Image 1 (spheres, rainbow, N blue to C red):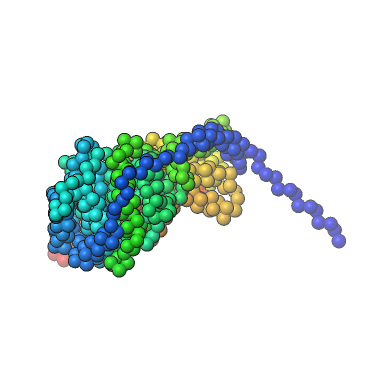
Image 2: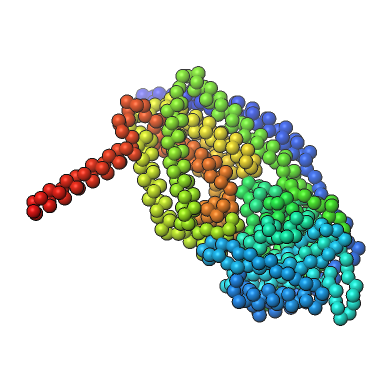
Length: 626
């Protein structure tokens, strides 16, 4: 039997060849540069110290607060803004403070709530003058969504607000002595808190007292059985000072026996990269005013229907209430040491400065940028023309600009639910139901735009290796430009972009490998957007409604317009790389390869000819009938 000749060894393509054009050595070597920002990050780690506790121990009465929360939730279970129950709850609030010599004035306002129209709201403000005009605000929202009593969210916070205000009151029947604070204190019962912190946003933007506010303490759902938590995120990538946060944490630990729950590093980066928060501290942080929310609930709002008085945890209410009083007293005696806002990431009991995190994220761009520019230089040395590939990217960009433009136009003319530029409640109808008419019209117009754009993108001949490499290079260079735009707007958002950059960089090297490997590389690049949508889907219990909710945030103006062109440019680049991976890519055709008329003109010509034929047949039929 003849011997079977040995199978020839498979030769690995040479680095720098058309099969392996990405310079892996340069890419790996550039990662060494990231070591310097990491070293700076290590030196930026700090451990903020809490301010000393006040001399007077807290006297907050948890049982009295629980009785108030029960009375409010049972007497006025429907506190939907503008309703009879809301007006009665406001009167009830004033009555609780009137016997203690505390006058409360009303600050009414109106706002449009998505899906509900224009509603009437009123903030109730109680002022306790201090030795300084600088003002500390203690607030809690009074309303609910009307579907249940809202005992914990937020009758408990309102009850605690009343109890804290009484501490600084004049008990007329007993004494005329007053605990005079060093700072002026404002106890604010806001309205519209269940609909995106509308009352807090109104106060921060338009209240007569807003100019003197130097710190804010918010009380939200503080009678739950969960571990206390601090909400510190704003509508911009900022947080209150580390000293303020550590002071609040130490006061909670003193009363509850353990410190507040802290989010993971990844969750903190997501919140800095995509600033979003439903709590009432957010509008103040956006105005550089340090603010923090004390709560026992999670990120998602507590369902009002199941939020009944029998589920109130009186012990927890007392603990958080005493912690809030202790925290307020601490700020009153040493606020100058805890003012200002910044950005940082908490790791255990230490903080990493935000500028150091940004520097590391920017440095992580360098390996990609170096390899992408080197790839472009290799194309130039091989005299590979990437202009057709850039024009192909331009056509894809035009399609996504068309889709984004239609979406923005629909928002202007009111096809999407409109309202104040605040985050809508995740449990609301507008957050969970796509407008059918607007969505269908958007899909139809998007398909029409794609039919026009695809005429220049469909492959009409075999695409050679050099043209494919040019397509990859053009897309990667455009993604690099997108990354620089992200750095200019919010460097923390690079956490969503870096997976696509570093994964898709290797698509030119794996284009001859198995389809499964190429598909996995493409999917890894979509990890960044998946983090955003997954955060809304799971943290706020939106599920499959998360994509629409994010789009609605843009339609309301909560997400800034700068995000739109960045997203559109990224989508165009990702679409070109997906087409390359699927084998459906074609460079933009030369003049002799495309029809004399463009796709839009051809469609118009067909419509005109069809109209003429129809008119001619109608005239002929009329002539025969005559």
